[in-house]
Structure formats: structure tokens, C-alpha cells
Image 1 (cartoon, rainbow, N blue to C red):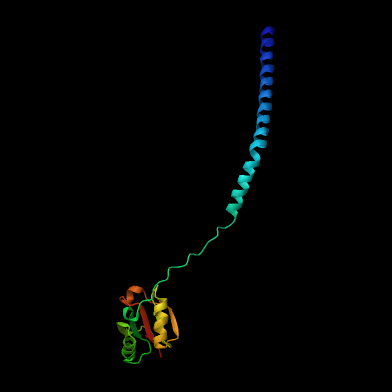
Image 2 (tube, rainbow, N blue to C red):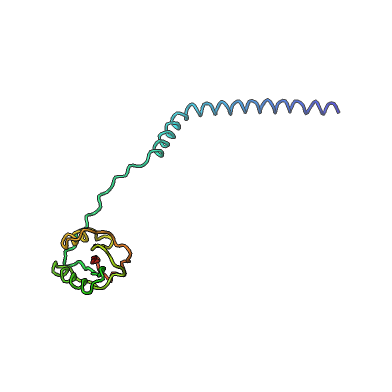
Length: 161
């Protein structure tokens, strides 16, 4: 039986020795790979990391200039917001006298202390020009009404007190 043990032990020693040599060679190859490829990879990763860390420069493209529609293509809804009978119709005559198309004429749902012009999205320039024409100081985006409630009108003029 002792002979069987003696035969097994040299194989163990040889296996351990070969494994140690293989581990040493693997470490040596790893060091050589780091030395050869480490610097270019480090440069690549730092450059890509720096590029990812800096916010992209946004160049604001100039918005395409929208041509302001002529007065005879702008439809205006006139609403009476002061509670006095006939105020909306009298103002509607002034709107038409300035060359604007007349949309619906009616009563505002509430009494408004000031006369104001409201414009649909995309018609701010037309709203400012219309307010200048009629000497209205308050011009703002459509508020409290949906575009579909305008029945196609671009602007709303609410006549206040």
C-alpha cells in the first residue's frame, strides 16, 4: 500500500508546480497588457468621461420668422364684458373700420374691469398690432377660453368698463 501513496504524491507536487508557473505567467501577461494598453485606454476613458460630463453646447437655431397676417385675414371675436347693452356691437364697428374680419359678437361670461385683447397660440404679433390699432393696453395669450370656442377667430377683444 505504501507504494500507491508514493506514486500519487509526485503527481500532486507536479500539479501544484505547474499551476504556480501558470499563475505567474498569467500575472506577467496581465502586467504587460496593462503597460502596453493601459495608457491609450486611460486616455480614451478620460476623454470620453470628460465629454460625457460636459453639457452639450446648444446653439439656439433662430426660429423661422412667421409672417404677420394682414389685417383683412385676421378674424376677431368681440365680447361685451362691461354689462352695458350694445357695447360689443359698437366696438365691432370699430374693429371692421380698421380692416379686420369680424367673428362672433356676444357677451362675455363675466364683467371685466378692463378692455383686453387675447390671442390664440401663434398670433401674438397680430394681437399686439390689433391692440395698438384700437389703443388697448392689455394684450395676453388666450385665457379662460379654448381655441375651439373662438369659432375660427384668431383674436378676442373683451370690452371692459
